[in-house]
Image (cartoon, protein in one colour):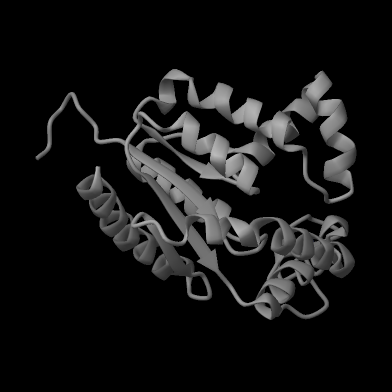
Length: 225
Ligand SMILES: [Zn+2]
């Protein structure tokens, strides 16, 4: 079963709204399988920082909590998947977000083996609680837990809500996510390699669920191919 030279391909798409813990789980998955975690959000933020042309266009949209257009994002991902470290697979986080992007991805990975799609599901009221309640210490910058009282448990400083996660923006982000990516689930749902994950559990239990789902989905996908 284990061969030193050949690593089985693992192509994963992670779906899930902001606050579902998708980034954390993608990170874990990537390091466990030694695959790159490819996040269009990270790539765009880096572009903004380095002041590239793409970055300029992306900045205003990111600042407004909006999403960058299909063509630009598809181009970014296509280029990234051609990199050497993605030869044996990838963990995609934040792409695709639309059916147009999903169709483009299917073309990109047609020769790469099964595409495992994981949809992390969390009830909306839980998401709003997690995201809008995210506060930091105004003095030392530490993250405060959702249930912390008025003062920082580390230094006693005042806790403030992170400005980019205010309730208005949270609701707007969830609304955009809902409107744009619901059709994606319909697009993928009938596939043998699609799995729904209950994200309203502790991160370690979510990780275990994902492991089990990947084994089942990858097996089903290879069996069909
Ligand atoms: Zn503090």
